[in-house]
Length: 117
Image (cartoon, rainbow, N blue to C red; front, side):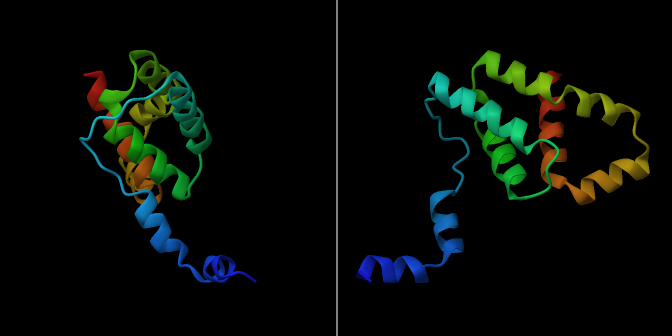
């Protein structure tokens, strides 16, 4: 076993995660068409899930909303359209339940509603 293999087995994944994925909101980024495609795909994958993927993707999209192309923003809003429509018809108890069980997705929907106004 090499020294690199030894340390790879013993590294703390949580520290790597914090280092590699620290969001930097407000810092403009340049996205290629492939990046836009990956963002749309990641959001579609995250939709309806209840795990770390939702937090990562929604935070990235919210933080970099202004860096996304108009077409990408349209697609993301359209894809969340059913959730936004259902949200208008939910009772206060249902709304409280969704905010408690999936706060990241609810924050994303809040962001989309704010951007539509």
